[in-house]
Image (cartoon, rainbow, N blue to C red; front, top):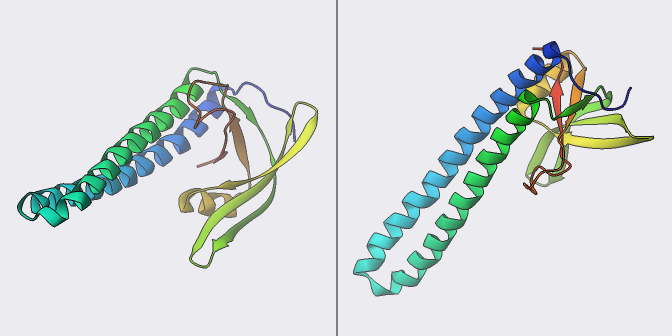
Length: 170
């Protein structure tokens, strides 16, 4: 379990493989959710034009649609920034010691696949739980090795000091 270092070309390719898969599925789900909100807002707006009592609901849903489009664009830009950070060589990697690969419950109907890993940052050992996708969960269950990718500070507060876990093989 070493500290953070610059990745080699082979490691960059392995990391990019997983980041691109995750970006594709993340963007697909975001676009689906936003399009449902926008279509529902437009439908209520059209109904609201003919029935005045529905107009306030249409305005509320319109505000929700605008907010969801903003969040979707920000999330897509963040996913692209993750890939670009690794491609440009700005991101650092560490090889963690994986403590546990399991499914954790965050509520009565919310459970997510999680990787618990220890990695060294500067002089201290840091423990963190990474919420991962089912695809990464299955890969890490088979072969419990991976990388923790650390991005440099950027203007994007969603990516500032963020760590991402990706498997080291595919």
